Figure 1 (cartoon, one colour):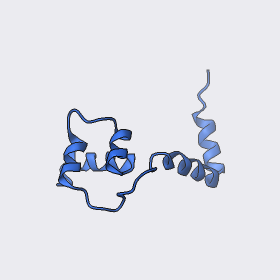
Figure 2: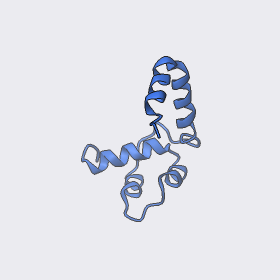
Figure 3: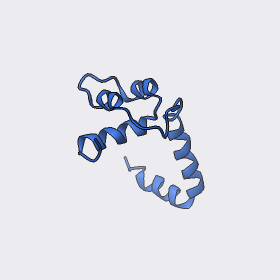
Figure 4: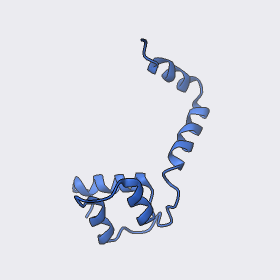
Length: 84
């Protein structure tokens, strides 16, 4: 069975506007309820993000009022020492 990746890559190259629209629609589902967007992260929020027994990112994002992408970015920065 042939891979569909070259076909998809070719379509994305020929239809950049449609591809961007698909990506926006996909990521918008993870940004719902992000009422704390742009606010400072509290130390308690940071602890919850890197805790060993933390809930899944989608549930944690809903509880903190952040997007899933924001949760993942902050966790990465905390674990790599780029953020305190």
